[in-house]
Length: 336
Figure 1 (cartoon, rainbow, N blue to C red):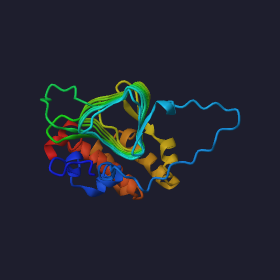
Figure 2: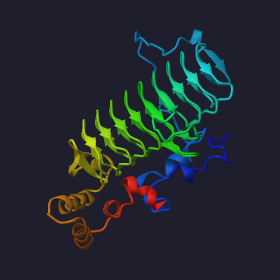
Figure 3: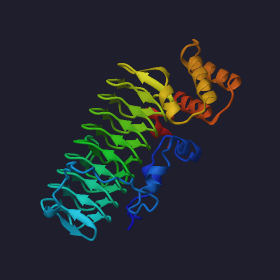
Figure 4: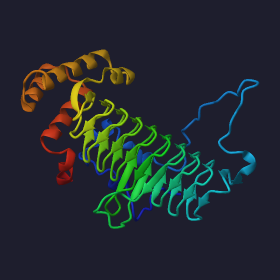
């Protein structure tokens, strides 16, 4: 069973990204994986072994087993409303009062807790955990939307906490894409046509407006607002309560209203096991870009001439150059 009807959807259509066709850029950003890896079966995934609770411990199950209906390895609460045209993988758990509409796909091992709503044209990979009150695949809040067929595509092993809303795309056969291993905390909103990579953390009450691109391993602080068409680079961090209205380069720390780059994401780089010499080079690049009173062209020339090369540094330079040339932000559509 395929998540994507062959005649209606392709992975290339989903990744309508500013560097479309640039495989190296996409791969390093972590944005080439989500669509290609969104499969119903995930044989490579090994769930964590959980030890039994100690004697006397109290286990509170999400749903009483006596109240469940088990069908072909799936567990569906009798109060849930599941369309017969929805495709459910093995081991799926559907909690009380969930609503699963037609033309949806939910991959193996997904858990949908109480009152989750999955709207049509949603495609979900495996081992995702959706917490109560979440609505996935709702129609976009966009005046251009005219009821066309579009998608929400969610990868594997994501944790989506309470009352999150994620909308499908505007535009025929377009998609909102969420990658793998992301944590989206309570009450967040992700708008239409957004693309999120892998291993992203979005803290509670944050809002990501339409057409934004969030590359892999980004951390977004709570109550942050991200303007439409903004691109946030790989391994960047956004401080809580920030208002992000411009693109944020990879590996940087941004904060404020409006958000400005204030340093290098040192903690994120260490956690990502970036070597110390590369981290020092990125610090030097930051100083040339933001502290040396140079314009963008002059700073990039000095970075390329004076600093030791690395894949991370080249990615930063390419990102800054794309911004200067109008390939990111709202202008990305002009270069497709």
